[in-house]
Length: 114
Length: 466
Image (cartoon, rainbow over all chains, first blue to last red; front, side):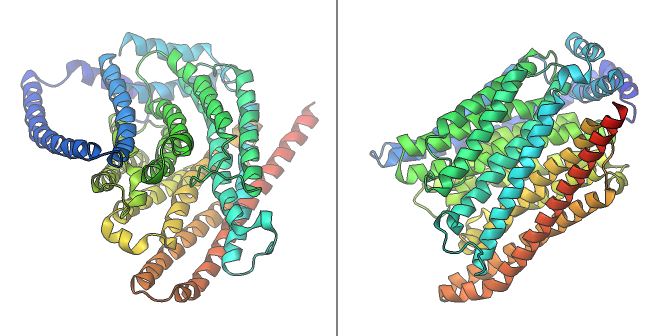
């Protein structure tokens, strides 16, 4: 990994061959199982807490203040969630390691041009 | 390799550094940043002298310790860190995107406007115009100018990022987020409690502001720059770009709710307090992935830390960062808060992160960039060593001293001992703090002298060549 260009070609070969079909389906199965195991309890917890929050906010004008930081957080996070979806749809995570080599190549190129 | 990434790679051949980077503005930002750091440190030392009852300006109202304390915190955040980061951004973004900033004249306008904001804030604070918001004491009449300045910064730097094609390097993810977050954080903290919400709700927003200023302004810029400078100095890519993105998205989703941990045991609903505690502990896991990534990158080249001073500054900062975050994941628990709240523990923690991490990183970047911009090596290697050791040992002593003192103070208060008793036993710790602060200031003076000597030598060389 000392020379970026060499590493790039090595990585390109690795990427083009990729894991076997069986390996891919096993990876998908593990991802889905883990996803269900993590997501279901998390969602249940979230719904319960959200109901608590609603109960507080409905408790008169004094209770309404609790929602300010939550709305701040949800606004910020929903923006980043949309950015994450946009990035995934635009292939930003397709070749995860490529940008680190490109960055170094460009740096070296700029230094050479100077 | 995707078509988009091929096109990005090919662009470098058509560019030169001087087409992309305005070195003059980088130099100006750095020098200005160091002047503000000096001001902030003098203010900090004056405040520390007040605590040991040796304030040389005692009795002069505009130089009273409470005002100097605000000068100290504001000068370091908006004067030193912001200027230091802006200088580094003017170097790194054009080189990473292979696009110049949106407008070079706008860059100079922002430079001037930002110095006006920081200068006016200092004057406002000294004359009693401070806004009632911790770390956001910028007078209310400055806030719209600062907000506009942040918008212009975002436009100037987001344009080259938007023009870039292909998958982005992690540094640019951090930068992009920082421009949006800083703008929103500043607006939330400076306008919401002032005009829209009051009471406990304003307290909660103030807590979010203080911590988001660290986590959503300073942290993404700091780490983004580390992801840029460490690989180019080591001449090897970051260990795992995928892991670096885990760090970025983890920060994006876990950090924004943390700030309320500043207000545990208050009337803020407990679910918000617990949310802040859990997200703070979650961030420690994210931080661990980031630190592993950087130490994985260093693996096999550890000797560089001895020979390359910028790398030494960077990795020292990373160790301090890991310690700070580890400490944070404990101190935000309700059990710890019972003891350490309002004590000097918090002050020690703040110095460890602001000086031990981000100031060390900015100084490391300056040490790397000044010789490149001046086209000659540092005038004195010894002064660089003095700078590093005085800064590292100074901040280590200061943080350790205050953290330990915080525990003693907390136990004393919990035991319902008289307040005076805690002041009396704090005295030797506060003396040690002055000594540590003077050591850190000595490090800065060594750095300033080295810059002066190097610039003089560069000017002499230029004159001889002419």
